Length: 121
Image 1 (tube, one colour):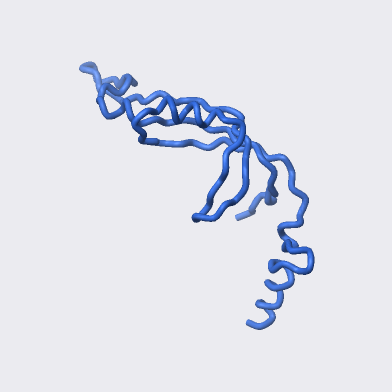
Image 2 (cartoon, rainbow, N blue to C red):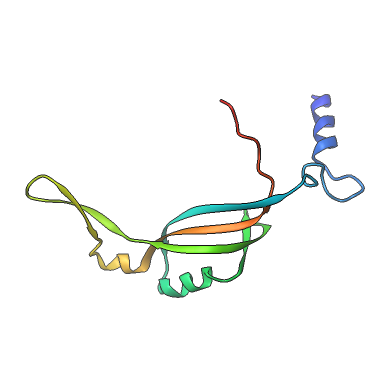
């Protein structure tokens, strides 16, 4: 147990530089596309315009985690699967009024980070 704690202290906790060894690794430019589902707001167009800003702050577990650049915002259509009398299914726009206040979108973010090697299971 003590050996494990020493190993964690060497590799994770900051030394005299103020950064851990893990944080000093070479960061590369990373682009990530995320899906945002069911974003419920009163005026969705204002939120979409805000997402098109140049940079945004990322907060993870109520702690600031840095800034990323918003590269692209693509709104996804809200469709429902509607069964037809002949047994087929059609994808049609959601007619419910509450769907006017909910949006799905793809956000493409770009920033600097460390890409881990692929995991082999």
